[in-house]
Length: 221
Length: 262
Image (tube, rainbow over the protein chains, first blue to last red):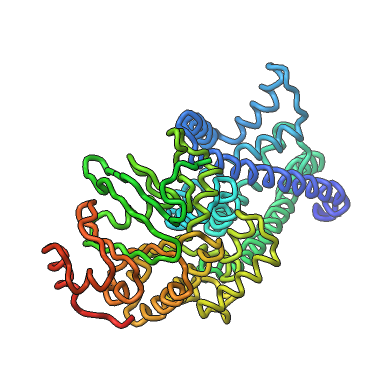
């Protein structure tokens, strides 16, 4: 029986790890996206008293290794009385961490947003909320699409760190199989395939979205 | 709200308006009254404060002193000097329709949705009602074939005509035009001026900053000349263009003596 046959027999473990990774990834990027948009909204036209701490928070997150944030949430929070299981610590850490990156990507684009469009909206009676959600945000998302796609791949790869805080996802499945049967090479090659498959699927989706924005003149593809 | 208004029928009335940027006085004690149905053109060399004056009318610039009423309603601050809350300000602003030099269409929305956006999401009109109105207005500006086009596919003249329809869709008390043809290729100027001329014939109240002298002469009821933030001359167009009172205006008109087709 070859090493590959062993892995085939254990395919159920890979599959459950794969589904778990997909679930963690899906939930955390939705969370990260909402956090990113929320931070951008709060930064928009607010007073310095609010924007300063937010900017510091965003920068602090970006300068922190992801693994340490995951450790902090899982092992650190119980010391102040908040106990999250490994799974939710992982999803939370990913969402907050990449949410800050999303916010920074959005903010970079916001800085070059044409002020005339905002004046036009104000002249037509728009107030902050509607202006943000109907006019600013959709355009910012269309314009930052390639960067967001890139960030999503980072987020996917960061899910692998969660093996260290005992989340049973894809890398954990490979880890456990490789140590049970002593076949690290084959086990890890299989998970690379899974990660690539998710990434490629994501790239295709992001690229398809590009047609939507190209029609509006945001992309020159 | 604001009842203490001297001229109950004026679409716009501006009193003692002053504004400085840093130490430079851009507007000095400006008085201007625009009656309903009237077309007022503001003329002056660049830096004279004419765009600032126009932008004060819908509070895109905050004046330092003075008052502005749109159809009897004070904009920006309450009569007792309290600043106006944003929602209230937005409501008064929606009484004005502004057309910009740089069009400022929303590029992620198609032509129809550019025009229906504010009526639906600011004024709370139903989608059907807003689209009926937009269809009629796009027809009026000659853009009815372009409902589904996105702004990036339009020429400058077409963009400006959509922007005019967008402003009209608010059914404003007054239309404000800030150099509407200055960013256009010369051969596209005519199509935009023709639309504005039609509007004036239909009785729309308009305040316009423009460099098109022949056009100003043809459509205006009142011409105002601004110099260093002061209104130094105001007259009906015939008087203004044929027998200006000041040397400054005479000189200005000599430099603009090429009458363009309007």
